[in-house]
Length: 142
Image (cartoon, rainbow, N blue to C red; front, side, top):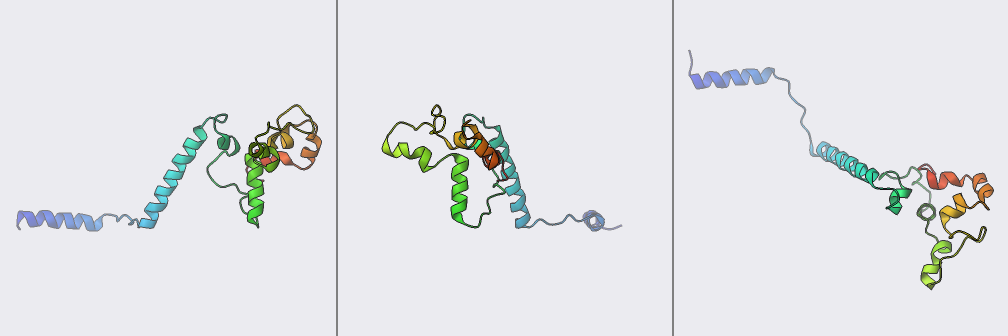
């Protein structure tokens, strides 16, 4: 019979040697896991926003990059982004000159917006459909 404290320590050491070891997490794994969790929470909150109250939420369904965000030039990215958000010199120049908002030059009854020109204006619907502009504004895969 040995010393009681030593027997307990020996038993714990023996039990731990036969136990399965858990893989150690390095800081890269922890950081990646935390980052995924944060993006998931952010995306979930983004999707809970009301579509009609937030302009960007209406345009973009998720927080993640558009698949089309890999254009060859920065200029192409700028043009596509401005079309998606509806900002252009044609539709917003009245803000600089303090004029009244322009009306659509084709149907003359609606305010001039990119969305109206490419998707809603009945006077240019055929041209828009032929050029597949529906894809441009309504999907993530332009």
